[in-house]
Image 1 (cartoon, one colour):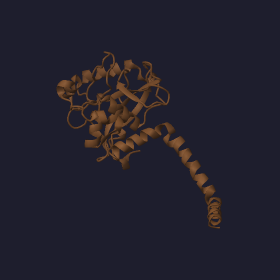
Image 2 (image 1 turned 180 degrees about the vertical axis):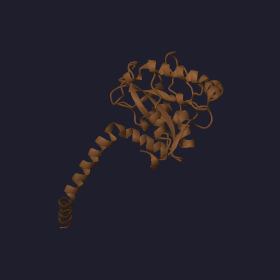
Image 3 (image 1 turned 45 degrees about the horizontal axis):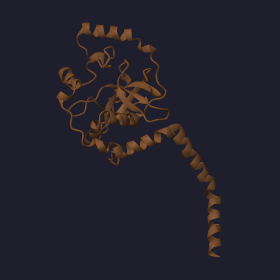
Length: 248
């Protein structure tokens, strides 16, 4: 008797609320598909663990013993110290002599040098670059850069509260066997003051731009050093130079 009453009660509840539950389920599926993207769900969980739960995950467990970088360890760091604390103030060659990091030419005070840089930029014909329609969200890029920097970025996230923001990305034909590669500028964002920070405290190991590659379709993005010239992303820095309430 009791079982029949319980069964009838369950059936009555499902008849009453079943349609509402179905609508909610459909709306959740549409949200995950069109807004979040099913392939981004693992990355959002990764970001939640790092930024909210302060857990690096097993994949970062072997990075906790990475020694702090010193100025002698990196020619990039010494160049930053010589010219400026900001990676955007100057240009530096990467492995290939023709690849240069983008920088803000408006910070150049010497008219002759500025004119020469403007000429060099025009010669690059950046208008021919293809803007990527498949690119990493901020958390994707951050995860890839944590691995590339061997945990140094993870320490910055935990100790200084800085996170990665990604600008406009361009298709990079130098895939080196990967499914897809792109090139983008990145910046460090300080959530406490709601604006970008030019460099982490201490040794500046971050570069202003990187490549991001998918080894296969749908795979997580991996970061590598920049291999293609791209323009300076003025819109990216303008967007994160004001507080959230002022941002368009």
